[in-house]
Each structure stands twice: as C-alpha cells, then as structure tokens.
Length: 165
Image 1 (cartoon, rainbow, N blue to C red):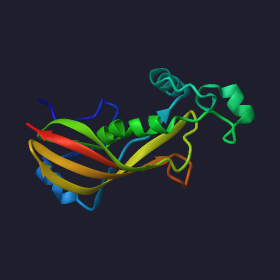
Image 2: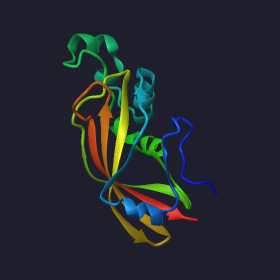
Image 3: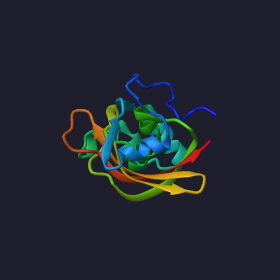
C-alpha cells in the first residue's frame, strides 16, 4: 500500500516523515504549513449542494454584495473544516501508514470568514501522539490561515488515527 500522500497538488515542499515512530519526535512542534488552496465560489456551491446548506451568504453573490457585512459570499465553516484532510496531505507524508482516519475534533472555532476566492493554508502542530491498536492517534493543533489576513479563519484540535501496514 502507498504511504498517506497528497493528491498531487503539493509544491514539493511536503515534509516526508518516514514512519509513525519518527512522527513521535514532532510532539510539541510545528510539523509544517501547507500550500495555499483557493476556496472558489464553485467549491462553495458544490459544498452547499452536497450538504443542502444553501443559505444566501454562501451561494448568492449579488445578495451578499448588498446585504452581507462581508460584501461577498463566504465559505461554510464546515467546508473550511472539511479541507483539513487535504491541507494535511499537502503538508506531510507519513511512511508505513495504510490509511489515515478522521477520528473527530475536540475543539473548533471559526474565527473569521473565508470569502469566496480566498486562498487558505493549514499550519499543523502535533500536540500528542498515542499508540492505539493497529496504529497511532495524533492530536493536531491546526490553524487555518487566509492570505492577506492577520486573523486565522479556523482553529481546531483534530484527532487523526494512522493505521499501520
């Protein structure tokens, strides 16, 4: 089985971590920062269709320009959150991992909006790593940043299980 790796959109700056054992050496440290990822209106519309959340602040650019305090449409908070997996894959590759499983979140805050067309990136710090049956569970402190903004758009404590070969 291949390592847990990116979808091919990485700039090549992805951190190569040989194994979960090596990942343990990063506890308490920033592991890396992803490339920028555009959150287009098309992506927002597709997410709205998939989740049935078609609130005008997300899908009606004309109304948002008139009535929204952001003067444009914004991404769903859960869309931003759902991109953590892709941002992580853009940031790092962990060898010897058969699959990564999203195990949940301990804490999430949507600190500022992500306007349509904005570029975001993820900053990943490994808070904890514990052994579990068949692999390891990582607790990631993730900050999602938006290009041109001093304020993060999302801050999350994310649990990922890495199942070994």
